[in-house]
Image 1 (cartoon, rainbow, N blue to C red):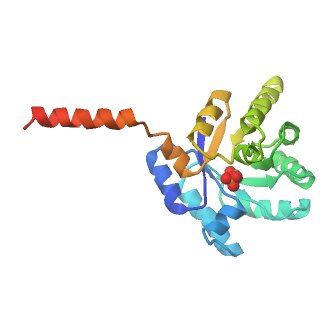
Image 2: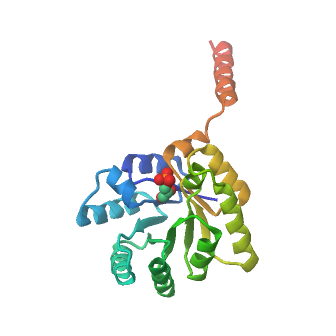
Image 3: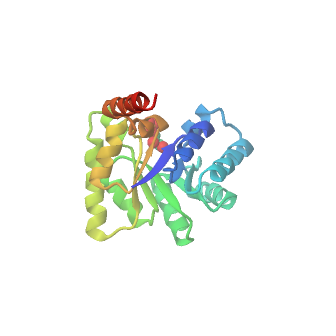
Length: 218
Ligand code: G3P
């Protein structure tokens, strides 16, 4: 399973990259705004900086909601760096743009996916990645992991190559459950990735090893 980090924060991206387990980055307009990245040139430069830090797919989202606008923005983003993946919203115009980019061999990530039907359309349009938002479904008392399972089943039934990129991850168990289901990728905040490291028995065991070494080597 690939690990992407879901942030535009450069320090967090560097920290995850330093761990040696990072396969890519996803961003969205909310995450860019959270870091205070505003204005066309700053946003484009920020994407380039992320591409220089991480070797892997970097999702950059279009703002336009019409086909022509998405194509214009997507082409400018794709020209920035070969690692850029065009992130398109799950609306009719986004599906048309997904088909357009997939025919040109440009990678896409269809985002804001909340149903199996939407995921099926994204695969039909040749999306490289589909992003079901599991945490936001859980927030409204709907089974987010159940959606990932449904999409896995549908994609496997027909051999769709679109990768399931589980998004809106809120905690470490989401990551583990996605791995059990067979999600191809998770995109997660740094805290949930780092949370996978923790176990009190590891800490207790290490403290004992070090104490025993000290006793025997005084
Ligand atoms: O990248 C989009 C997605 O991961 C959003 O997560 O936490 O805002 O629901 P969240």
